[in-house]
Every structure is written in structure tokens, then in C-alpha cells.
Image 1 (tube, rainbow over the protein chains, first blue to last red):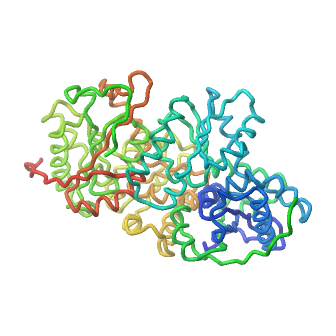
Image 2: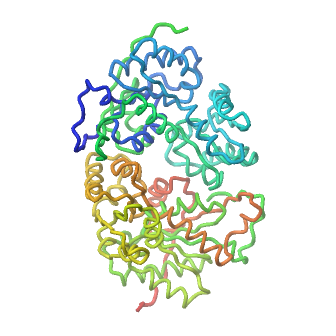
Image 3: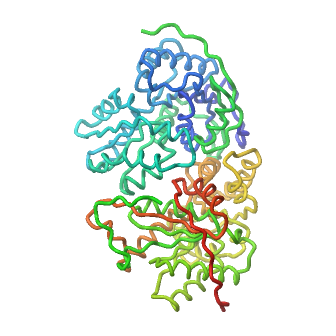
Length: 297
Length: 297
């Protein structure tokens, strides 16, 4: 756990502004999103839950993912988070609308933000040619969530999706990239180069870890849009709209918040893999047992 | 080695534009500079030499560093590089002027670029308050090279240097950051926060590896300037001024260049540590024996 170093006294937990932001994912991938949030919003506290006990989410049904998401959300709400971030593309694509409805019904109106819409918005803002590429897992590509999100913002933009079945496992497996990894990344980039896209959405939370390789293969003129960077502004906006920003920011002095971790699987495995994904010290990890949620329509 | 995938036939080595760019450092630190060059100039070939057999440079005299730099430069020139990049702050601060003079005397006028001036230029361009921070090794801070470079561009800017004796070794030692590492980074950032700088020069090639932690501790409004990003534009400019850009860029199609490695120490140690610093696959590493240079005035 990071020590809280601030010249402004942190408000008590009874002040809703002083509560942490809840972030969850199927495992460690969402830590690349948390990473961006920690850099962009250093004065906020964060509570991250990795559902490593049920990883991966990629092959599960939308109904099942919705049930998981509700179980996790209720655990985080019991721990008094002020905002929920779904830092997982599969869970966002499958469960966000149902989860958001449920949260509005059962709680005091906690906002739920997912990773798809902020990325789509940012990609449409970035493109000059109207040709946007998407790299994502087969499940996420098949859901059509990004196509819908892009079309809602600008129907004249063309999305070129590339489904990458092996890329996330390769990234999760290792720090040393071998010839197979390079070939896989090159293969994923080829159709995007052919399509002459000028913006590429990284539609999986694992992909920011190979951003340099992607940037090199796609060329320096291509804008890469990742979940974390796109989401950070939306989180900031959601908090300030509801007057929920942490008062540590009060007088312009920078206070530094805390971040903590929960996981449903092995704690040591989470810590070891997690440091590489977070690119920061990890600290304490607590194992948590989730309560079963009722069936959701 | 990366395979060269390009639709434009690469010109032969007799064409000076097709020659590689030579980059050198005392060890693996300069790979964070090469990393930025590989991303910014994907169509160029690179030849990197890490003088790991004589690492570290930090405690050596300026005269000794100049001799080392000339030995390395002559080896790279024998391998027909078209431009020399000194990707090491200590070597740049100690040896750049003498090295540049020597190169002009003994060769067909190969340009030599170092890491200090491009960073100083970029930092002065970025600051709005005129208060710039510098994180560097004690040797680099003591050399006064950054102060001089900043003053030359804008005498009204104030530089706040912080000498960090243990930061580079801590970064080189490990992927897992412990409490000591966090405390060291926090201690280095404290005087810069007190001085309310709005721009910070990362004056050591190791520091980009902890950029997220630095950005979080200094706050999102502070601009971090690193050697690699600052240098990439200067390299591009130097090449285009002398009409030496690789013709792979010719028709707007993106060709991807090769990159190769030489080191004076243990090849396996270089490969293992190097991958973390390069953040890309490393491939072939060749051990090289340097010829002794004559004494330099």
C-alpha cells in the first residue's frame, strides 16, 4: 500500500468524496487501466478487484459475465467505493448496460464506467481520415460493441476490426518476446497498414504492454488509443459532475492517494504478474470470497 | 534481429542513406534512447554498442571517457554508420565536444549527437513558469552540462538539479519495486515539488523505466522530458539536412528497418537485462573487442 503523503488532511470516510474509486477486471489486464488512472488522478484512492479465480472471461456468456460483474460490484460497494470502473473489454461489452441498471436500482446511484465508449469517442476525435483500426479479442470483435459505439458518435467513420486470438495470452506469458510474438504482432498489424488507418484502438487491456512494438510496426504517424488514457478523463469528469473529487486536490497542493488490491485467486501469482502490468509497486493484496448474486434478467 | 519487411527495395550498403545509425552507451541504459528512436524512425537501421565490459562510466575522468568514446566511435565507423548518437548522459557531458572534433578530423564528417542539448531545448520549450527540474546522477549534475545548455537557450530559466546517487542502480537491479525504491523516488521528487517546477528533465537513461511513478509523484501537470523522445527529432533533422534519411520512406509506404547489438561484456547478461530496457524483442547480440585509441588532447 502506498503511504498517503499530503499536506492537506484527508477527509474522513464519512465524506463521500474521500471514498475510493472501485476498478475491476477478470485478472491483471485491468492493471494497465489502473496504471493510467494512478498517473492521471494521483490524489484519488483506488480499490482494484481482479477476478483471477474465474479468469479468463473471454469464452463466457453475456449472462454469466453480467452475474460476475454484479457480484464484484456489490463487493466493492460494500467497501464503499464512490464510482465503479469496469476495466475489462469483455465484461464491458457483455455486461455494462445491465450492470449500470442494477447499480441504479440497488444503491445510491453509483456511476458505472466501462472501457469501450471512452476509447471510441477518443478514436473518433483523433482520426483525420475516418479510418480507424481495432485490435481486440475475438469475443470483443464479435460483440460489435466498438462498431456500435463508433457509429453512434460518427456514422461516417469506418472501423477495421482485427481479432487477435493469441495476442493477450502471449503478452501475459512473458517479458521476453520471441520470434513467434513478433510474428503475431506483425500479422495483427498487416491488415491495418493495408487499410491505411490513422488511428488504432487497443481493445484489450493487455495490449498497452506492447505499445512500443505496435507503434513501430504501424508507424509513428498512427495514433494509438488505449483504455486507460481514454477512461481517465471520463472518470475525472464523472467525479467533478457529482462533486465527488477527492478534497486532497483542494488548494493546488498535490496529495498522493492510496491504492489497494483484492483478488479471487492466488495472491502471490497476482502480485508477481501484477507488478509488470501496473508498472508500479504493488504492495498489499487481499484474497476475497464473492457472495453469489441473484439471477439477473 | 528484426526481419526487414518492406515493399520498397532497400538500397545497397554502398548508398550512404542505407547505412545504419550508430548508438552507444556504457551499458543497457541507452536502450531506452534506442527504444524511442526505433518507434520514431522505424524505417532506419540501427547498430547499438553497449560498453558493458567497462560499465559503469559514472566515476571515470572526462579524459578516460573521451578515450572510450573515441574507441567506440571508431568501431562503429568501421561498421559504416552514417550518424553517431551518444546515448549516455555521463559520456555526453564529459566527451561530446572532443569526440565531435575528432570525428570531423578523421572521417568523412559524420555528425555526433548527444543527449544533453536536445533535452535542454525541449525542456525550455515546454516550461511555462521558467522553473525546470533535473534528475540525474551526481556526476552529471556536477558537470553543469544541463545548466549550461539551458542557459544558452534561455538565461531566464531556473534549473533545479537533484543528484540521485542510488536511483539508477535500483532501477537496473529489479522489476519488483520495494518500499526502499518508492522512498528513493519520493525523496528525489520532494525538492522538485517544493520548487513548483512544471517541467522535469530525466537526465539519466535509466529513468524512463520509472516514468509512471515519477509522473504520479510529480503530478499530471508536470511535463517529463526524456533523452530518447528529445533526441528522435534531432536525429531526423540531422539526417534530412544531409540527405541521409533511409530511402525506405520513399513513397510513403512504411518499411521496417533492422536493429543489431554489440557489447564488450557478457552477451547473455546484456540480452536478459536489455529486453527490459528496450521494451521490445532483442534478437542477436555480438561480443566485440575494441581497439585502443591513441591519447586525446
